[in-house]
Image 1 (cartoon, rainbow, N blue to C red):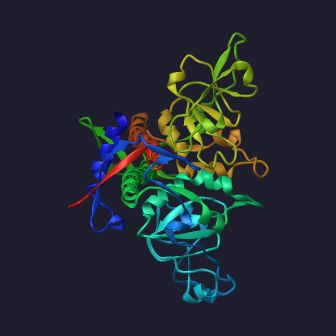
Image 2 (spheres, one colour):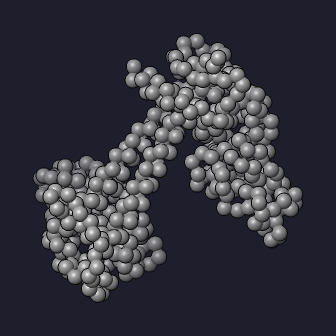
Image 3 (cartoon, rainbow, N blue to C red):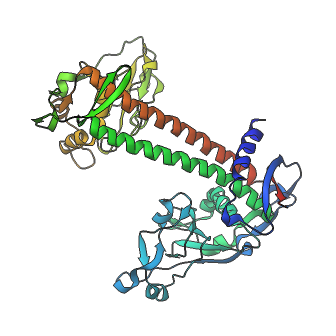
Length: 467
């Protein structure tokens, strides 16, 4: 069965690296899993017979919110104690090690803040309700954050971390509605949870932590590829690094001879051209009265960090306003904030032969004597994009890139063979990024599926003592 194979692979990996936070004496390890068949009915639904329903306060040593020292007292801030705010939790993945603000011992003593021991749960009660993190260092928190200190003899902090994430929709349901939704410490303390034996908690946490580590690994690779792409765009699109082909291999070399232009230095072998000399904004086209359906590209289908736009198939009478485009066209968002957010995509080639329309808030660009992928990356390059942003016109919130500003935009124009080499290098990085993004998506789906099975007890973790 596919699920069993997937689980077994992750169990095999995670047993090789047991986390220090899960070490006990004697040692236990997860060795497999099985499908549960015997359940008990509870107010929370069916759970395995060996599990219990407990209140969160019954398996914790302490559940208490923090407080904020008076900001008018400078001597209370910039000390040695990390001070946690909601954004510190929402800006990290799982473990909290640093904060944007620190307080002093005097700040701690002159407020409702208190020192939360490491390996506790930091739980958001206001705003981002249910956001949770595990602190790796002693911290203090503000009043919007509830610190949950587990009873180590009853509960595993990693298990509780995943359970609280899983139960987030239920916490949101119980939130009190005022000017903004919020929970109270009492609601959280009294909240009832399904509760497996301690060793099974650890087994569940090990499996989910393994998937999380895999996701973090993918995130790190994507971040490195993004940095590499950014660096290469800066070097290749300005000609500071040139690329040529010798014996089927790409050879890089640093350029030494430049010419001064209106957009700065470019290699002597390059030209400077206006956008309208290399490409054109596609003109409108009347749709045939016999057409029944079209491929439509709304603004939300245009990516901000990938190559191709997505599309929807719509009845032709459902599309009241549009611009005409064709497969291979570059769609450049012209309105704020879409332009500033980098929204830009290529119309997929798979739509060839179909009628393709897009939102009126884009410029559909047809390339003439410039490689379309090279132009795509030029329009993504911050120097070019910032120039267009400075020329936007309109009222606040409705600014647009004027057509003439785009058409008169000056662009570096290498020989077409070099354009294609540059584009292929950047495309290869983008393709790698997309592959890793797909892998990350699969891992996140796996994690959601595992949480649904393991945290409800429908699939049980088998834990053995290590002799």
